[in-house]
Image (cartoon, rainbow, N blue to C red; front, side):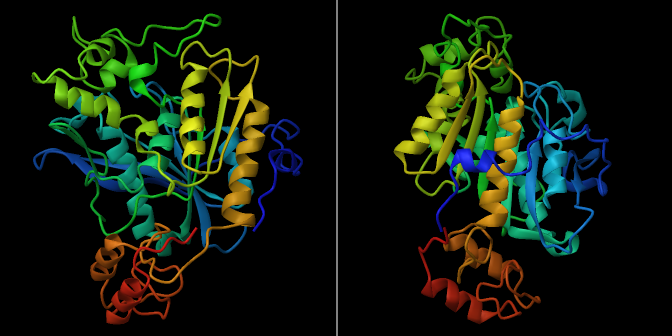
Length: 397
């Protein structure tokens, strides 16, 4: 089906700039536990808040909202006006809490350095799919959106949907993780929006242009260095970049972490459509970081739009909000992803993970779009395994 142009999307009657101020809304379901961290002696639940539209019967498309704050601060409440507008347009909003680098005492002995953050977000996505029927969610229509550090995690969620363990030389990083379990479900999203998020941590400082200038991301005190756990004197992102091919420990592992944390690293043709918005006067995250992601997606044939705000800094802007809403409406409501036989975990691909999803719910009731029911006949059984095998390797998009 032909997609609308950006100009046409922005002409839709859903612009935020022309809307009256929105009253703050409260979660429909507050503090839903999607995983447990810490230790057996001191378990700590990690939670999300779920907002459901006040009208409509569902199942609703879902936007995973990932807050910003340099991976060390920020909060998932309240949801900004952008997400309230999406809620009004018929989307469920799942506002996720994730481990922050400033919370080592809170989550000990669970680590708070990367990949903790993306492990948490992926755990939340899997949990939402596993409980889609309970909350009237559509597991085939998941999108993600975030600002700054949240934009980074949204973009990484989008490009690493088919990536579990990322390796480089002798270093490795588990991007999927096992937070909350539900590993038979997919953590992939079908559309991803990135508001001025970092996309290549090793090139944050090299990407700075003057004007507008920017901060030094290479130093040990930078948010990126803290994210990677290399934040003591003499360390930092700059030190990792200078030692990318140093075989001495701990550099192979640090290189894998730094490279694996970059959404640009994992781009491939199977990635979902992307929308990127960024101010060209941003002195916190260089605008070139968004250019890098746009170029990588284009090179792989992934539908992507980069909307620049020539006078904007490190902040959202009305045209960006409008376009993101229009993007999700187009991709998840007007022209939703195709549901295809064999896809038992809503990943838009038929592979080994679908067999795992079928076995995880074997004998359970199913139905169209129900996890595990690869053929939509209402029951998860051997027929679903046969369907998955008959459609092995196919994609649904």
